[in-house]
Image 1 (cartoon, rainbow, N blue to C red):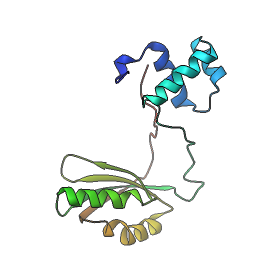
Image 2: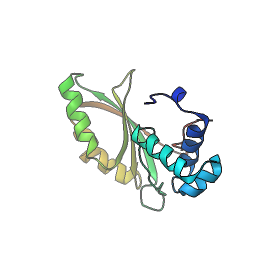
Image 3: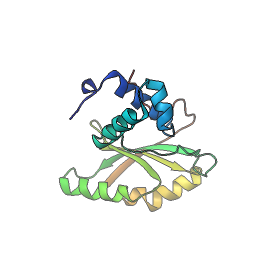
Length: 158
């Protein structure tokens, strides 16, 4: 079973690249793009999914049109760094829909969050009712995004 990028051949990489650019490509279009039969491509895509290279498919939505146009990054410093506090914090973050990403980081703080809100008033309400109430939070630093320069989920494969 492949477990790294070096275990994938050129066709696997091409399929992954095509699918990350447009997850709605039909099996027939994929087959044409890599010059294989649709049956062979289907088997490869199923294997790539089964082995965890493809995690799923989703539509990218326009946050401006859906009332979530303001991006805010938040540094979170916990009051204690014990397994229990980490577990409580992670569990609480999982159920908060306004927190899009949460990353434990090395450095001067414990977690980096990416949040989305309609505007600064909505973010302020979120900070008071949710963010500052998360288990173990001692301190936060907020960075409101003024301009989104690049936003992609595509990995460099080829």
